[in-house]
Length: 151
Length: 151
Length: 151
Length: 151
Image 1 (cartoon, rainbow over the protein chains, first blue to last red):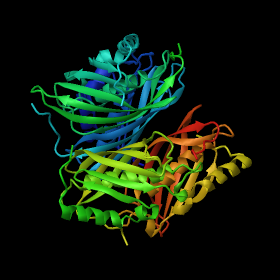
Image 2: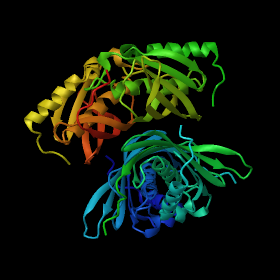
Image 3: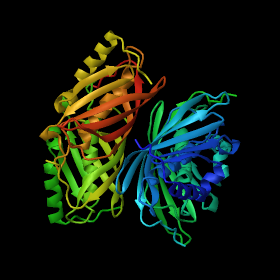
Image 4: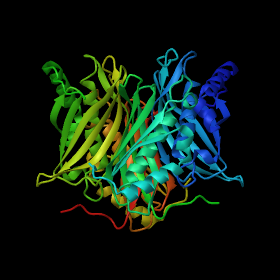
């Protein structure tokens, strides 16, 4: 729905914001794509982000999908505003087994305050094949101006 | 609804499974309570698990709530079975600001295959006050026997 | 959380708004309770609101839970504002079998724009027993002033 | 994902099951399409299925989306089995204003027991234009054999 290119200055701001998400650095998340209404993030497999059976933890998968949705939403929000997650729902389709996990988020509906996004998460195997492992449906909200934690 | 004590041997198995979740160790999650149909996990604040404004990332909060729900469900499942997340939905009520984050999960309905849980997540401040910051409604499934990732 | 009494004039306005929901009249929904931050609606069983096996349709159960959540939210919103559903998630715990279905909705967090509610839905049997059959977690939004459909 | 034709005998059984959903008849729902992994249902506007502002009630929209998802799931289930809704989440993108409402449901992942579906709901205007008004993400379960309400 939103396939127009993103202004380079705007893309730079979005990428800088992604870089400020220390949780993504902790998990090793990489930015694959930042476009207007669409953001793709990737999470390489690591043994220290798993659940009890060695699958990647649903919380790690959710982190990547949530950030991808949030930034996809922000690309369509007014400049100078920030984004917060209101809610999301995740269906886990298969155990998260693979070399990399790729969250492709897109805006479904951009409103004045609320933006609804969906994200598909795929597991990429060593042989190049991919399978969808999760599906997110999320609501994001525009915040004016950027919030700061109480200090 | 489920306030009976948990068999100590069973509790030991649950705690060992929690210890195998490397994602929880990576985030610094601590076990506060393991009872029949109820599990409480806590996440101390750390600067490296945040989003762009210095709030704890919704994905970190979700990780703790998801694990708490999963293990709450498992306490009521047959011995020898394992648990996987089917889906969850999280409403984020306030930015995650605080010293610690406490996810209290309880079983709402334990079925033969599917178990529905809810979790309340609270932010605990330095002055001892607490505020609810998130709410999860989740479905967990019983797995026989414990699954292993393809190797 | 919100157990204060509701102003009688305000309660009257809420009940009048409930009466304008023609969908509720079509299904035969009855108002059981309207309080500050809490609304209870009941749906008597009828053979013409079922799914293929004679259970009450999940859509009918959702209708009652959604309206209960919306009005619970509205009781805490500023006077003169209206309410719209942003999103909801429903877990169906058991087939909807019973004489009456009772949706008890409560506000979890009332924000300036968004209000998060939860609702428990119970099936009441002829012998007076009740079982929870569904669980809703919903987001409602305040609208200023009341919206009208394009005509 | 599932665009193969559906066996005519199977399609007949699905349509007969849809006809047994008395809730759909009460709301005036019409079957637009039944294919393998895909079902489309339509709801013409009626003044007696609205909320307080004259928009179609979110519960009516949910009913149509839920049935479309359930039957999309059932087309891929083993013969002789039945389907029940486990949970669903609905994001309401715009007020439900239009002449007809069209729920297009598709299977995202068909498992042995659980099937995940998504549905897009569109409002169709008198001038032939359409806008998406809702988005559902749902889990359905296979039931062997078809359940019956306690009598």
